[in-house]
Image (cartoon, rainbow, N blue to C red; front, side, top):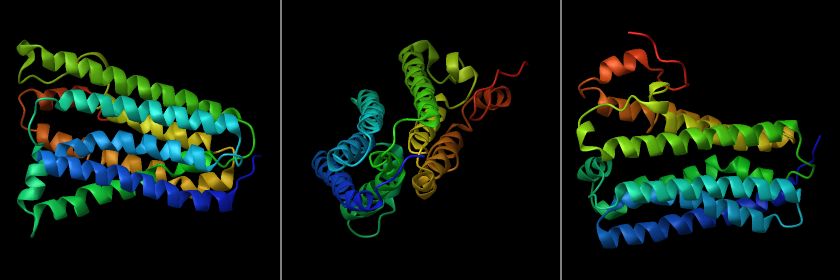
Length: 267
């Protein structure tokens, strides 16, 4: 069983919080200058990458070097791919309808309201969700079977997320598909391959810390929170509420798994 450097982990959280705050404040300044708050979605992946890099630097000489490098690289690959995808998807578009609706109801100054309810809240979530990434930096023993299983689960997640995003982008780029529901490729097995991919990525990263059970017990809240957000929070539930009235969606939902991939039902 691997050991865990509790004191060093506790000290590192402060540096991580500052990194997440810095990313969100810089993004906020850019968003206000451009009048476009949708760019905070790009900052989500960048903030996790910053957290991983800061944790890696802060944990030098504390945890197992292989585990430290592994969890940092996996987090950065996921975060930067996601940021690049969202940036490309939003290029040339105006404000996201979600943020327009939120800011329309803002009491007082709209920018300060966005700072509190979007940027600072997302910064807190980044620190919370990334706890396994931070903790893995301070596990002292070598990688065990569970950590390798976590890496494999992360790879499955990245596949579903990246391939699902690519398939959807190609589908939307075809004018013939305007107004139609994407029901091909991975999207015929789950209505949300990208969200399922995120789910696997974060449970995979959590498993990398499970060689130190006390640290795993202290950070399991993180993948649980991410799972809630993906399934019942701002992910699946919110998107399906928006899609409910689209022609063909009810039939698609009836034959396609809501989250976990399953063979499509026959008509």
